[in-house]
Image 1 (cartoon, rainbow, N blue to C red):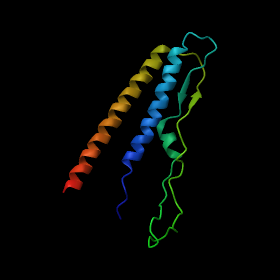
Image 2 (cartoon, one colour):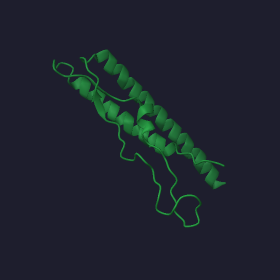
Image 3 (spheres, rainbow, N blue to C red):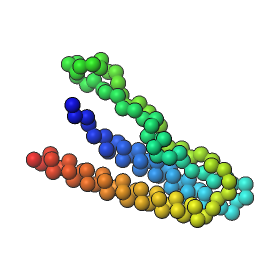
Image 4 (tube, rainbow, N blue to C red):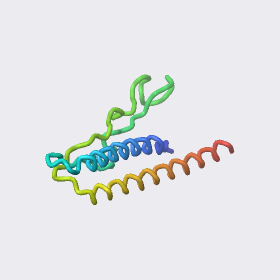
Length: 125
């Protein structure tokens, strides 16, 4: 049995996570000179993805196994959130994180673009 590829959903979740992480990095850099400020970050992406589980959705009465109207994507509201990691801001660490976010966004965009091109080629026949 072939399972659907949920690449676009995964890419959207990663883009959301990268966006929140970039906001945390920007906040850390902006507050680097504030003595009482504690550095922030987000949970690793693999932990963020674990909260979302996909279940089958019945859209037709003849679908087997799932009653109509039941099932959905669980964890839709699960968004990456900033959390205090403690300790002062180290600018070198924040710049490295910013570079990781940039590289992650570039990879995410490249993978989605390649998958989109493949999907278009298949659909054109």
